[in-house]
Image (cartoon, rainbow, N blue to C red; front, side, top):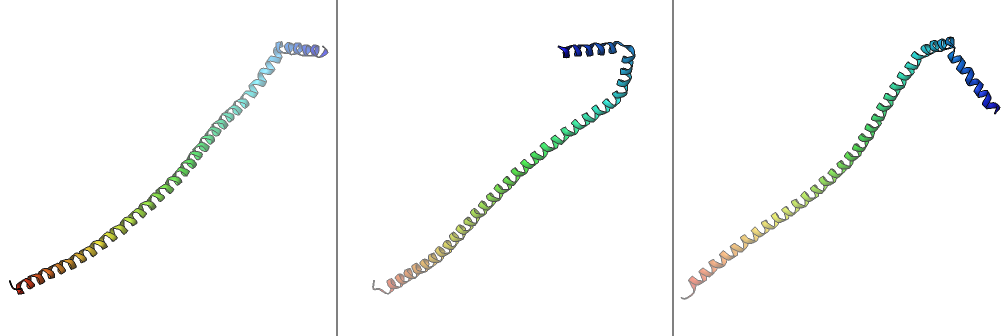
Length: 134
């Protein structure tokens, strides 16, 4: 109860001071002196907030660049893998082509030999037919 009475007395005394015109004038002068300082502090806070926003945007951009860089590394790896696979397929196709070409050459040689044997056989048959009584 005693504390409440002290608070009430303080409030009454402050109210009396506020109603006193000279106190109001003093406070007004003090407020005018403090106002430019407060304005500068508010402007500094606004600049600080803008810088914080800019730094946050840069951090987000850096994260995006890092993420995109990781994706590019993965894409590069995929491309290298696909190029290697294509190279293996091309090498296999070249080997098959060389094998087919070699077999064609062997078949051509065999065909020539068979043709020569057939021609010789025909010639021998004709010769034999010409020599036989008939």
